[in-house]
Length: 409
Image (cartoon, rainbow, N blue to C red):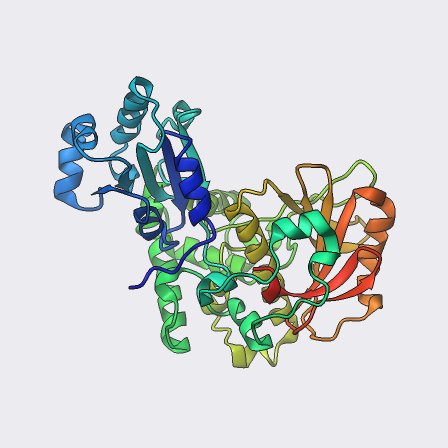
């Protein structure tokens, strides 16, 4: 399978030239092994039993005999390798010695903090729209932060409306690209089945009722793009509060849940803290509920929630891959008078806000929540964008524009 370049590739190479070891995390199937392999001179695959046994017997000898960088894939299968790498780094802190890859938060018993200052973690998310198509975005997020809406005005999306809506039902996990819709959704449902059976064993100290947990995943998937409270999800899954909270924690450790916290700012009061519910890939929720492009065309509210989730996941993935240091949240006032789907705090104190609109037609009136935030924040408000699946980006008001999703991700 041909390797599709990832936006994180350049950052990985740059950091490997500075740090002795990197830890590439991500959900199963995110492409950790293939991405890390692009930089590795040698690989130890610990999902291969003979290799795992050899490394378990003498991890330092197994690692030190190979040329650098050494990729230690599925490192959590042999937790002792973590301390071995740490010791070898203590003896020689030369950059570019090791790349470790493994499932998100998988090795909950490993002393991860002991690697602080030695092993730098990076998270690999599902592919963005441009990565899936093998093209570069029209507008970079760095340029957006620097120039505001001037960076996007007049920019045209290389993707059709249908292509920009596709991430609602098509996964960005590399191994699932290019499949026929029916087979694609079947594969994603199987992915979730395996996640709560096989993958769960890596994060759960005791066995769990996988059928109940699978039911909870489906209930959670029904709430993506909303701020549904936990009680509603527990009720839909027919589980108790205590059981639901345990399941939520387990899915978070697996990296499947991607919740967006309530945003806060000292210039605004009475903002809700309840998070928006998202999965790491909204196509997982679609597949679990048999939502297809055709069926969603008749269910606009559900499509709107999934498109919002896709926009959130795509923009956060792009910003994280580039190492921009943006911190994300969503804004909702306690009374529900104002709501903004995604707000980014920039390292320099600036703020960029994104609202999501399903329609290709955007008017100035659609920007009222962004306008209110701009007026409250003053100069700190860098830009506000209404993200839509249309063709062209254009100015709506001072520091506010409408922009197709396809120009940014």
